[in-house]
Image 1 (tube, rainbow, N blue to C red):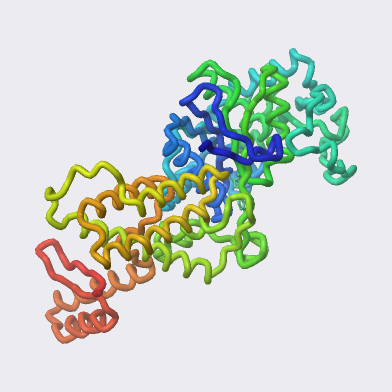
Image 2 (image 1 turned 90 degrees about the vertical axis):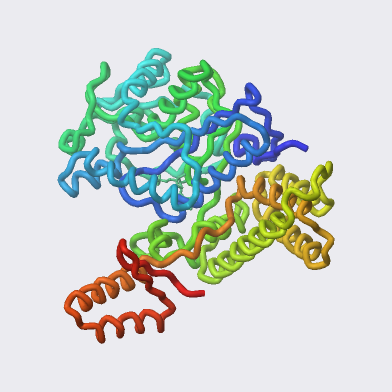
Length: 481
Ligand code: AMP
Ligand code: ZN
């Protein structure tokens, strides 16, 4: 059994073999930190998390790199509109991104290169491309990539078969380019760039990096420094990045190194909200923090995201969310039952050599599903079959503590990949604020010796299922039941 991954480069499932096993280098295009990342962005990042965790489960030694795009058109525009510097604008969104990542239980990448920290390698890369004659300085002082001089351009997106719509994107810099397909590596500094502190000196003129250049330079720098290689095992991102972003990353990197940039290209499909594309205009952008505010368990969000294969569009609906909440509740209950059964007469029977058949079937099915292009929906199917079968064994007395322990170990091993066990019952922020407000009112009433009012508040909370406990450190509360 080997892991097969759908490679956009070959348009088929390829058996995954890294360049230098057991090491696997993965680069995933990260967030543009001009705003809060939305749940669509996080669908892609949770897919990256799944990939990374399953590679580790399979015994690989993963270096996971995710960049932070902290200088590009959007970040500059947003900073300029607020009249603040680029860093002042992006820094809070970097922090928010990390908070949201932790909420969604996405394991931190090994390194988060920020574009603004890698301007020197970006400048080097442009120089190398100029030396090799695949780049030129335009009349406007920007540096462009000469697509015509990179014969395999379009391979990833199969652009040769795609219509290059003339005039589809009439850029202001149109006349400085030799060919409409050429793209900017380095953009000559504009007033707005200077205003927000997004301009750097370079031998070919003051300016700022283009977005595509950033990823090439950061990815190459990270793997070259660590391993002395210039080829990634896996490059991943959302499907919208295939063209032009990833096509251009390939042209830049391979144009400079002469080596394949990435061996596997993986692309996650989009998330839609109730059937429509998320957009500010429709007022349907949903962020991770919106879900957190609602008190939603991150396990349920992951469950919802994993219920659709990463290469299928996913429709985020309330019904799907309800089903995910119910699904993780079952997983949590099952885990608690196993834990309880495993503890009975602990230390008693031991020395079992083999896992019970139900456990072996589960682990085999899980692996088979995940080896098939990370089929999380099938893996979840196997998980629920396991839950049903193991519950039957526990009901019938077929399983003792040793079997329960084996079941628990298997479950926790799989959860190290999927991470779907719910945490303690979450409380919506709104509820928390309401309860804490009333506790403060009650403390004031008691300080005023208005005990009737204090008791009324306690009763009101109790009627809503909230119990209070007065301790020397203040009043604590918890939900009943
Ligand atoms: P950005 O912050 O816009 O640079 O995007 C970060 C990542 O999110 C990229 O890999 C995009 O492809 C991905 N992405 C953007 N919108 C969606 C969406 N609606 N569903 C899934 N992934 C998305
Ligand atoms: Zn990128």
